[in-house]
Image (tube, rainbow, N blue to C red; front, side, top):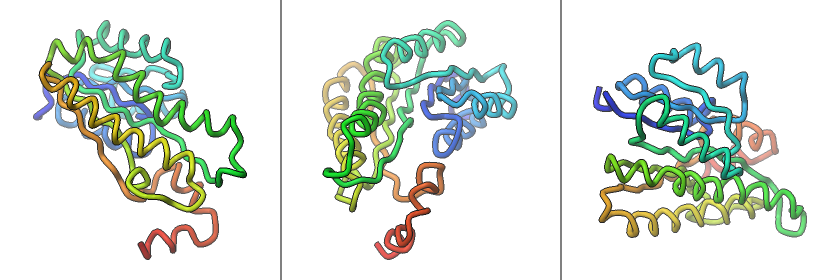
Length: 205
């Protein structure tokens, strides 16, 4: 129960890594706010976790107004915020010449801008409780992948943005880290795995 009395927001929290994190926070005592665009999966998560220490907030992390509303909902329901887990993300499989402008913007808006919006909205509350930010980056932010141009760019930016956040806000007692997972069997990865040879190439690396 190391998170007893703590309040956590998990974006992209209705499936994959986000849901696993939400379950773990909740099992160790935290009140958890799950932010996700999938209302059906969000309702399923609430049915599992319960509403006493759980809240589902439909949120598009690429919309700053919605992210501000998410943070306000956490404060209103649970009295503050201790942990922000910026986990929401999307993938994109295309080289630069095949990548549409709209797809580039979609990936950057969700995977990078969504992290910035979350931090900007949550920092006033996190300062009050000397809280924590965790950003989901990726091994794809540490190196290049074939046909992952937008995703590689966004996740690399998240890693360096995390460094900047940590430096800027350490004196305020806010701790900031990024995690860089390899391939995890999530909905994003399962769609990429449909491309012949991708899973084999990842396993070899």
